[in-house]
Image (cartoon, rainbow, N blue to C red; front, side):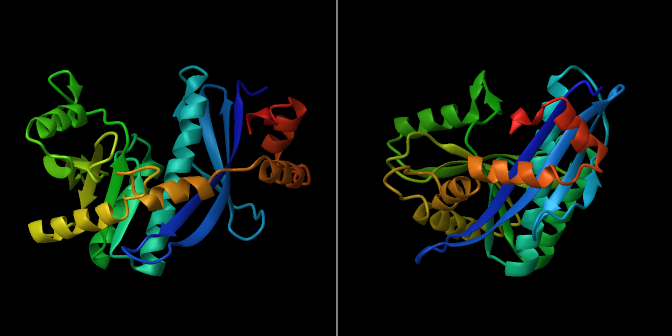
Length: 272
């Protein structure tokens, strides 16, 4: 028996949000991740699903088992790897001026994730694309409090309702590529500032244009200060109960895959 098993259906969506005009959606790119424990290691296989449920497993680096929670951590990492690969695909196929990701450009110490991130950073540089990532909750502390809270308090003291300021740099990926970290408040009605990570932005004038573009896409009255593209991508990427049930039916036809059969044998597909 496997100690634990997690099956996840995931969707990753790209939303084109120009400064003016209606956003166009590319996707969703669907894939299935299957995470399981064998002996003392945790393994994840990815089953890509661009055209139907075409199984083409990709093995992530096995991890030593440190409790049941490790299984869920690696399941999430599988989704992270695909997000990075999909972002690379977007740059190659669409050549956007700016690509905005949800989260940060940080990574765990998994070779598959590091390789995917290094590839994304390199293709962004080669293609002249500014790569950005917006974090809703910052783990960077300054004098015991999140850096976003500290900067926001200083901004209020100076009467600033919307702003951006660089607060540091980070080293990302196996090549230790340097990125810039900004605290941004993109709308005067925003409830809070966010941490924005930027790579390949250019000079200060280019950074100003970048911030203007993001601010123009963050003026939705329902969520002021949060980029509309990220909000729409989140909405389109939600997996419905109907989709989950459809994939369950398709999986039942692939009993030759031992792990899938094991999942059904132990009735563990309730993790959808």
